[in-house]
Figure (cartoon, rainbow, N blue to C red):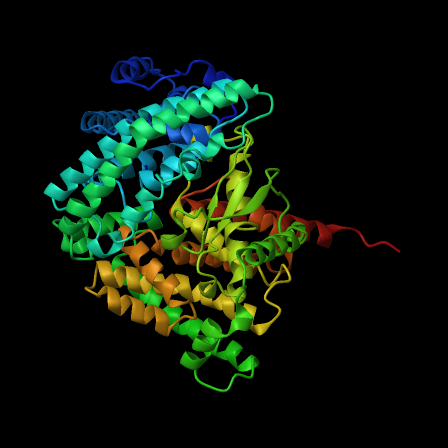
Length: 616
């Protein structure tokens, strides 16, 4: 499910026939058998509907995020049998898609088909690599997803809280299934690198603190709606507390002890994905899926080296603007350590992020013809995950679920959160980065919900990184330190191309990767270490940012050269974002078609100007 993260539900007719329970094998076979046998257009829509329903009902947490009905009392079934069933169902959907006569489809449906087929094919290819046997890392897993899902659930009525209680009651099964997958991974030597697991037990134990009311699992019961009678509120809280004490504390303790006593000691010492059986092919698959390109790891490594060299020269020039006397290493150490660049309180850090976001919002109409309606906010990363979490991340919102988008900023360890990085980070995570792009995709009324839920990493993160370069147009980076910060973030993503491929393909050590990162960036050591460990547990994912950015910049440069004075940045951005997230190969084809249409318009306009009779 790497490219399916969130879904947006808008079609009432589509929802009317959907089940309020899991799509079991019988229900799937019935729905599959009912697919049209003729008319390719109708077949495609029916396949999209079935695929969408299958995702929502197979992965209830995703349904919760986007307001899909009937799934809020359930968790995903991660039993071995159910995983096998889902894989078999996906293969059947791929087979049905292959049998469509695409020559009968309209141009718009050709794109729908291309995306559906490419997604299903990529997922089926991935079944040969048992990713499901490492369901928990320090970056992801039930210790992170469960609190996030619970906090995202509706909490407006007694029925909503009954759903939350039902999920709490079923949570032990999910934890036990996760532990069994981890055991199987141990037996087959498929685990995250041991060095990355050091903080995992602490993350899990943070869910069951000594004071139950402080648990992220019970946070949703702290402030209940006034419309629920006080006596009923007390009853709901007590039931949650009973579940927590009798069922949740024992099962979370058990998995924490299993991780400490068995999993970490038995985990893989090697850091490279390529060190595993069939690891080179596995890494090549991850690279292909995350970048949506055909570039080899070696080619990406060379691109990274070239980008590092280019950005380093630009950083050197900006450093000279500051008047700093010393070399690059001394300057980056100055940026890492001088107190003037750091806040003294978490509240001040968040306040500055919110101020930057507000300043950006007022400048956006100059760059975009269409802006999303959904608002967003800035919040701190939860304390139970902040220590091993990256600098920031974005969580999509949903109009249907009544939830704004959230830019989560890390307020842990203030000496590692420099002021000079804040503008670039806000542009990337909020506006015009992730929030603008994802919210716009969610609000596209003329594409299937299946399309609106697709988050291709190379497009989404490539757009986020490209957005950082728009900071200049938004009135940011006015002092050389913030400008250096923007270059530091660009360098950060260029370094990723080098160290990710270096560790997983070319035999680099973790220490070598950290050293290379520190030499070419002003990022603090804590951030660098967290980043390197992220690349170890998410091989290939970090490559998507820079490659996506380079593709978008290439498309823009091509349009500017072709259209010259007729180039309109607002039209370009609207066209780029107008179909939601796309794989890079399909994005390029779409933008080439847009450019051809714009060129034709420009030629017609010029011809009409020449033919227009003179006036006196």
